Every structure is written in C-alpha cells, then in structure tokens.
Image (cartoon, rainbow, N blue to C red):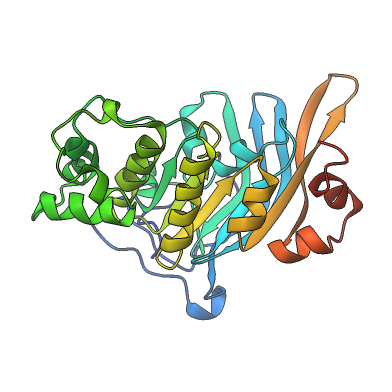
Length: 297
C-alpha cells in the first residue's frame, strides 16, 4: 500500500502524477496502475544522491528492493550504507543540512514528493538502530507506546503479546511485563526494539547493524528472528559482518567509497547488487570479490 501523501526535498518540474495523493493520513491514496510497477517491488531507487550541505555522501544509486526478502548493505566504513538506509523512511529529514536528490519510490509513489507525511512513512517503514534504545518505561509500555500514539483501538494487551511473540521474546518476559525494559539483557533489549517496531504493523523493517553490540548467542537469535519474520516483512539490513550477510540475506548490495584527493572527502557508490549467493561465489565486479574475500576494506 502506498503512503497517503507524497513528498520531495525540493521543487522540480514534472508531469502530472498518475496517482492522486492526500495530505490527510486517514484517507487512502489511489494506487499507481498495476501495469506501471513491478508487483514484487517494494522500493525502486532512481538516481538517488544524498548531500550534507555541499558534500555529496552517496551518489547515483539505482536499486529495486523486493518484498518479503532480506536485503543486506555491505561495504567499508564511510561508504554511505547507513545514510542510504535512512532514506527509506526519511530519517535524514531530521538532519538539517541533509538533502536528497533523485527518487525513492515506495510501491510506485515517490516518498520525496511534495506533501508526504513523514510520520505515516515511518509507521509503515520501521527502524531498528545499531544500539538497543528501549524507552525508560516498562516492557509493556515500550510495546504499547506506538499503537497508543497511532490511535489504535482495541485490546493493547493482545497487540503487546502478539508483537513480543513475533520477536521471540514473549516466553522470556511474559511474567514481568510491568518491569523496566532497562533491566533486560542487550540481546533482549534489541528484540524488544524489534517488537516495538512490529507493534505498529509496518510493511518494512530497516535494521542498522542490529547485532554489532551483541554477543554471538544474541546475534544468532536476532538472525533466526529475521529468518522467521521475513515471510511477513521486507527487511533491509546494514552489516559489517560478511558471514551474517551471507547467512541471512537474499540479496546483497556492495558499496564502496570514492576519495576526493583535493577535499579528502569520501562519496559512497553502489558497485554491485545481486543475489547473495552470486555476490559471495561469483561476483561480477573485482572490487566486490576483493571485499568479500577480505583483501581490502
């Protein structure tokens, strides 16, 4: 389902849209014509670049992300993986000097078109951050917070239980829902954050290095969880762990950075995007092979 309003970062000349959109987040938007979009595509990126002021952090990315798959972004530090990930739910809007050029099409509707409600975008496209960030509230209130804000009616207890079960955490916390979430272990806190994202019933979950602060056992649980829920959700993950990318992802995007020797700045570019099996066994680009085999990066 497309977002109910459309937005862009700056005015541009364009033809009249084929699908009408609304600012009112409570009214549905007319969908793009079926013949205009790939039925398996959730996102289509077209010539996407991101700037921080005059500095271009990532440039000219073209990519299609398919539904109910895990897509991994890999590459050396400073190549723009997290910057790109934050484009998918407009988190870069929160950075004053950030600017996005090009298009991020979500079911055929440009998220950076003129009047999109970013709050509604983030409800449909949730995010789990690198460091677990539970609210200083009870376990129950952490999960119930999003549905309450969204005006969800009905039994919040049922929503909390369902979300915790989906995040494989219910059996561990069901007898202490009123206890502080801050008392959970790091791995439990990260699964709680995933449950919190699932509670508002998104279609897409963005994960920014969700296991980087976790031990191998907790990492394994998060990876198992991703495999279990990908039949219901589209997942995009940034990871520096090559083994993790190979284990959990269906498709993989490798980025690298071009260094400007004059200004000593680095601009991220997409080198290769393909099935994970092919990326790790027979990549098309030598730079990809060098990275996944540990020869550089």
